[in-house]
Image (cartoon, rainbow, N blue to C red; front, side, top):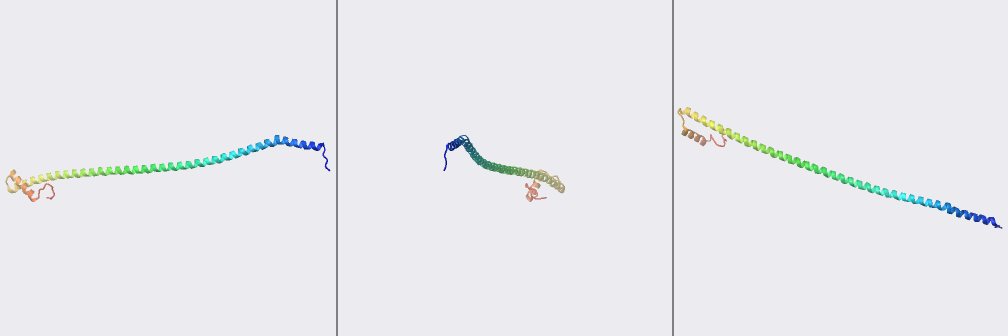
Length: 167
């Protein structure tokens, strides 16, 4: 049979006391340390996940901003090209107008010079005809005869104001 004596009770009391002391001084602090450590790890993981989410959001915002800046740059380039083409068209238009004005001025000047040359040639022809008439008739031709000769040349079309008939 089992004998229960005082040593057995002392051993049980000793065991219970040691268990209580170990629980109080060792198990609870170690358990508290482990729980704190677990909480720190959990917080660190949550912070890391939050940081990753913020990083992803910032990356997305950066990419969106980069795309917007790229579109704005493209718009600026397109506007500059349009303005350049418009300026080029304006310059070409102004150059064409200036060339047209110069050409019209040159034509007008040529027409004036042709008219002056024609009038000089007509005067010279009239003088030659009058001189020839003097030589042929052998008499001096007066102003009435001059007018008759010029009138006849005009009627026959040898002398016209437009100078269209060649001599």
